[in-house]
Length: 463
Image 1: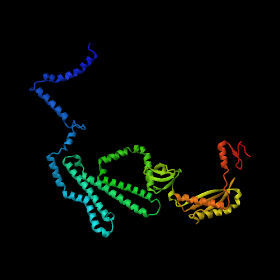
Image 2 (image 1 turned 180 degrees about the horizontal axis):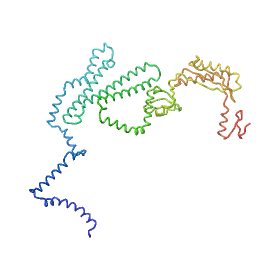
Image 3 (image 1 turned 180 degrees about the vertical axis):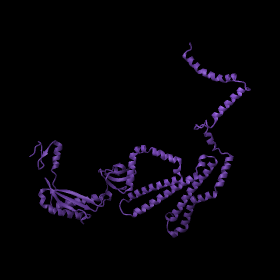
Image 4 (image 1 turned 120 degrees about the vertical axis):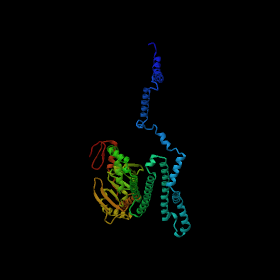
């Protein structure tokens, strides 16, 4: 009872240690003699317990314990293992095959080119790079290079199999490499030939924006080739029959709802981009006008969004989901343009209007040779109606000038100058709008009213 707190802690911690140290001596002191039947029975039970804990069933739940050293021991190469690997390589490979493949893949093309340039170029009068022989031999050379890589993977597979690596025994690395490598190589070749064909076909075709059409068809073709290549690889590797592949799609079906809700916006943008890509509404480089009034030049047409360069040189990125639901006007495909004006003439010049209408049409036709006058499009200059303070004349001309580009603005300028010439020729003056002064007075002084002639009153009364 007189022990302090520190002494109590030392006693409590030291007591188990003392019992642990005294346990072997106590066991030996109270143990039966080794020659007795009881000692033999106890020893047998102890060995059985040790065997039970050392059995594989007892260690089946471990993850890494005792498994690293056996795995690393397979990579320990001794003389016996080296001899076994050498015998397997000698039996299953042939050095002549490897030399032939390497010769065709890396050394044959320079040799063939040297022979052509030395003996045949002066007759064919064609560079080596432009001949069909060059392209054909290039394909053969690339196929041989891939074959040499597959051959090396086969040798590695043989070595790992002889070493007892379970992964190499289960799977054929050479076959997998050949399937993937040749399929990807063939897809790249088809994509390149497709690109060459599209360039040639679109160059010979009619219509504008050939670069945009080439970009659209080329990208859409790349998507189809990629899908076919992926399906071909999965079929050759029998991925659809594998358990992991089935579990993956089973997991995907379970999580479809959550994924669809999370990726709803992305899916809408992708579907909108796919719809825009599969149609010919517009291409890169086209000037478009959207239903909400947004206009600009398409500088990038992506799967998720497009980039528009507006007239003030700012770049606007618009999601495809917003574009697919709008009306789209492709200004770059318009081959005709329109110039409309509303002329305000004073009442004092009313008698000059008939001659003015004739002179306006004649002057515009003289200064603007691309004016359409064959009757297929409107070509109007008319006395429209009387207004409070002026006579209104409507002008509506159509030209064979695209609505996009500097040519449209130059043609519109020439048309306006021609109208001004006709006005000066007939000595007709424009009637200035009287509502302009009224609006200024309204902004400066507040609530104002005007009389029938447009004169504002400062005191708020009217005549």
